[in-house]
Structure formats: structure tokens, C-alpha cells
Length: 121
Image (cartoon, rainbow, N blue to C red):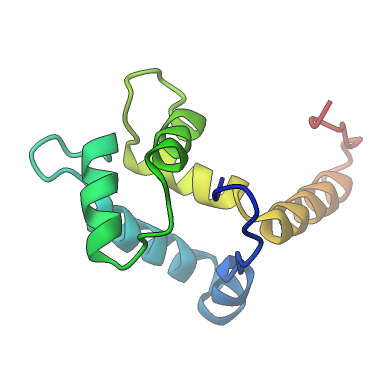
């Protein structure tokens, strides 16, 4: 999602998950949501993301990057991110966390006697 030519992204979600546990990580994601939310609308809009990302020192994202971020996470098509959409997007943007989640899902399904189905098709 970062502009072309930049590869300095560091994924800290797996580290946070390891240190905070599942509930702690979700709590921190909810705190992150609150930092980016449009307080009048209760969702993250393009405008609130742009304004608050700049205040947080995240100047490296272009308008296209921010617009695409909203678009990628907007499951209900309202042009904004609610808290659940934001948390899901953060997980989806973390390849290592997604791999770990898939591994845990497979393990749980096997324990319950279900055959794993690959949903990534």
C-alpha cells in the first residue's frame, strides 16, 4: 500500500500479539482506531485518516495510498471504516499474523474433527 519503490514497512503486529496476547492486541487496535476516527461520524473516513495520519507523523502515505486503504477495508461499501473493518484490515495487512491465524485455525479444526478447507482460493 505504500508508494512504489518503498520497502521499509515493518510489521509489528506479530510482536505486539506475542507480548500483549489476543485481547491486548485487539485493545491496542481499538485504541488505534480511536486515533484515526472522525469523532463526529464514529468511523474512519478518508479525510480523518489523512488528517490524523499526518498528526501521527505518517506523512509518507500519498492520498492514493490512504484512499486505497479505506477502499480495501470497506466491506459494507459505505466509504469509511468502522472499528471491525479497521481491525480486520490491520490483520489482513500483516502477512505473518495471517499465517499464524491460518495455522491456529487449522489446528482448532483438526482438534474438533473437521477437515481444513483452504479459503484463500
